[in-house]
Amino acid sequence: MEIISEKLLMICLFILIIHSIETVAYAVRLAGARVKLLASALSLFNILVIFSRMANMMQQPFTGSLIDNAPDFNTLEFVEYQFRILLGSATLGTIMGLLLLPSFIAIFSRAIIHLSEERGSITALLKKGFTFEYIRRGVKHLRFPSLSYIRDIKLNNIPFKLFFINMTVTAIYTIGVLSALYAALLAPDRASTAIMASGLINGIATILLVIFVDPKISILADDVINKRGNYLTLKGLSVMLVSSRLLGTVFAQIIFIPGAKYIAWFTKFIL
Image (cartoon, rainbow, N blue to C red; front, side, top):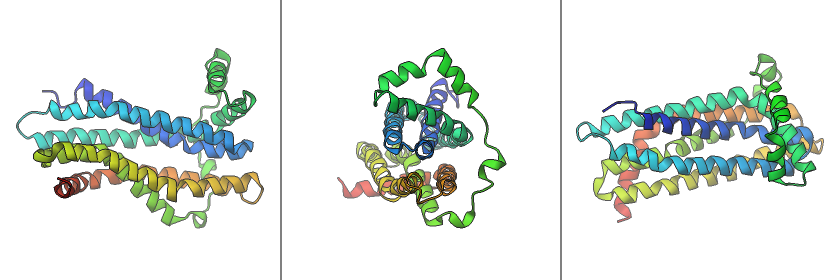
């Protein structure tokens, strides 16, 4: 059996796209504050989040099939190796989103303005956005971040408590499905219970993001629009969150196995 199969590569592509989308989504509030249309920006942000969550749900059955197709010998080592490749694709997707962040601030700024002009019609926005002329304009906005992009960001403006919260929550979200599937191998008599725990883990991670991270960014964006805050502060916080998200996907490699063992242990109290 091939170690890296076509199915594994397909799942890696899914996860890479998911984490790229969730990373560039940080550009939406920056774009909204830039064009002073935060409510329209949040509607676009919600679309991106829903799309990434849907893509995450689509890849889960394929990820589960990796366990079904695992060999009978050295099963744990084989599955762990494949799952660590998937975690690596999450890191790669976050790096890709980080590199595209300045480009998507410009692209989302135009998209938010057009969404406002179309009175909130997503279909009209997509119809306009997928024309050759607008695609050509979008390509012109593509550029890699330079040192000047982060030159004015000050470390003393970065809330490190929020940095570590976002890193931890990202790590938990990244391993949610994979640790639950691996826990099913550790506790085969409670496999179904362990697998179903992935939804609970991702749900808790999402709630923590909504409670501790999203309000902070939204308030700073409001301050920028109402001229009570600095755009550079908002940009610095967004870059900080993307950086902590990147470290979170790396931290996921460390807590992947301990997380699976904890899920396997916890299922004892559910049965």
